[in-house]
Structures are given as structure tokens and as C-alpha cells.
Image (cartoon, rainbow, N blue to C red; front, side, top):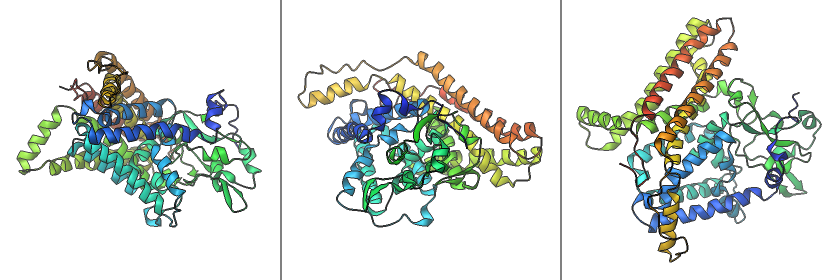
Length: 476
């Protein structure tokens, strides 16, 4: 068995580790975000209608998304750890207990992938970035969905099978540098209680719950489905679970049986979620550059559409169905033909599709990072304005000229993120090709490398087009 006791462990870092191991650490992180969520809802419903002057739109569409991808890049899924929706759920569960198990037919990622697409579609159709009121109702809807789903169903059904933000985080965290993981497997071999999954009890009273997402630590492999809640850390009686460093994207290069998940190459639903993640990144970026309007005008004229919804439907169909089927399917067929693999085309496409995740994350990172960094300081005048509307004048007059870093500074970072994503995908694809039976690694790898380069070039072209500065007064 492997021994990870000598690798970097965040929980052994002075102060930070002690804080994270504290039983109430998650609550401590959730409370500020819950207060902030309430402020965003109230300001979204009752504050200025102009998006760049409202906390709901500015924090949601400029700051939250950018901070999210940067934290995923540098650490891991800590936003799920600090999720305010789960804090409300915990309070609600003190009043009533869920009785049902999540339906077996829905224990896949198909529903959450569809909801992920629905969020992307609604963002474009309803111009959510420009509507504080709609953004506030979206946040309210999220709280309501959590209470309904987890109020009826046991364990963490909403996180594992429903939450679109959580699924984004799960896929993105596949390339994160940290993982909640067993330190020494030998200690687990001698454990009889399995508290990390069962929880600790005093007779019939649960003192500390185990992993609600059904990830048994000794058999857990990677970050998929892990919310970094650290319940396993609290439950382990041997102090044998840490937040350990690992090679980013390394879990995409192997295909073991994973606790709570199974085998990646057999999970077409997770592969479909990964494709929504990758090609959704391209689609979301394309929706913010000038050529999209020319495409929309052409579709309207050709099909004589009077409404935007069917126009967007065709664009989404191209990006999220036609494009991935064509590129991934063709690459799988050519790779099988050239590489001499005996694996059928669809299973081969499923296995290699995970290799595109680093590139997709690079696109999200370049896109969201651009908006976050160029609008870095916009939260200051918006907060000053919100405080002034309540009669709190000690923050001073709103400084609306504050924006963020200049685009000329941010664009090289965008390029770096894209190159990093491309390099990650090429490495993963090559490792997957090495593991294919036979000795035609270069031939099996070539078509997948071509797909990566095509997507990289398309992303590069989009990132250096003039991009809408949505949610900012500097939009033009």
C-alpha cells in the first residue's frame, strides 16, 4: 500500500491546519458567506436596478466566479466547503429529518449536467448579468432547492446529484493540487470501525457523521464528488485523513475503481458532464464576443425566428452536442484505427474525453479570471453605495472610477492559463495513449492532440476578441 505521510499536508501547517481541523471550522467559513448571500438577495431585490451598482450582480457574475476558479487552481474545492446553502440545510435538519433515499434511477450525473446546461442557457437568455432582481431570485431558488431536496432525501443528495455549481467544482477540482486523502493506508487496514464513512456514535446518538457523499476514504481516489467538508477528518479516530498535495490531473491518467463513483471509463454520465464543462467553457466565452451577434442574426434570418430562445437553442446544440460528438467521436475512431486498439469507439471516447478537462478548465480560468481581475475593485464603490443607502456614511462616497487591473496586464495571464490547460490535456492524453494495449502510442495520441490544439486555437481567438465587460460600468 502507498504511504503519503511524507507529502505536504495542509492540515499539518501551523495555524491553518489547526483551524481547519476544528470541529466548527466549516461553520466559521459558512457564516460570512451566508451573511453576504442575504445582503446580495436584499440588494438585488430592493437596490439599484443598474447591474454594475448592485451587489447581487457584481459579486455573483464578476467576483464569485473569478475567485472560484482561482481557488480551484491554487488549492481545491474549498468553496463547497464554505457553501452557505449547506449551513441553512443543517439548521433545517434540526427541525425535521429526511426520510427518503434518493431514487436509484437518478443516482447519476445526467440531471446535474442538464441543470448545468440550464444555468448557462438562462444566463444568456435572461441576461442574468444585467438583472439584479433575477440574480437575487436565482440565489433564493438555490436556497429553496437545497431545502426541498435535502429536506426530503437523506445524506447529501443535492450536492452529489443535483447542484450545478457543485458539479462544476467537482470536475474542475480534478486538476487541483490538493486532495482529501488517507495519510497511511496501513492504519486503515487495521481499522475496524470505519468511522470515516459510518460516523461516530454514542449508542444511538450520532456524535460525528461520516462522509455523506459515500466516499470511503481508504478506497477514495481523487476529488470527484468531494466537497472538502472534512467530516471524514473529524470522524477518523486515528487522525489518518489529511489534505494532501498531489500532481494536478493525475487522477485523469489512471482508471481505478473509485469509492462512491466506480470506474471513470464506465461512467458515460460523468464523461457527459466533463464534456459540458469543456465545451460549455467555449460556449460561455463565445457568448461575450462580437461574432456571436452575427451568428444570431444569420440564424434569425435563415429560420425566420422571432424569439431569442430557439436561436440560442441552436447555438447551444452546436456547442454542446454537435461539436463534442464530431470532435471526440472522430478522434476516437481515428485513434482506434491508427492505434490498433480493440476497445469500441464509444468506450474509447468516454475514456479519452476526461483528458480535455485541463484544457476546459484553462478556458474557464482565462475567461473568468479576465473579468475578475479587470473588475477587481468594483466591489468597493458598490459596497460604499449600498452602505450609503442605509445611512452608513463612514465608508465614504462611492468611487465609481475604481475598476481593476488593465486588460494589457491581464491578457498575458489569460494566455498563460490557456497554455497551461493545453499542456495539461496533452500530458493526460499521452498518458492515456501509453496505457492502451499495443505499441502504437504516437498514433493513438495524435488525433487527441489535434482536438486539443483545435480547441486551444479557438479559445485563443475568442479570448483576444473584444469582450463584453458584463456587470461593469466600463462595459462598452
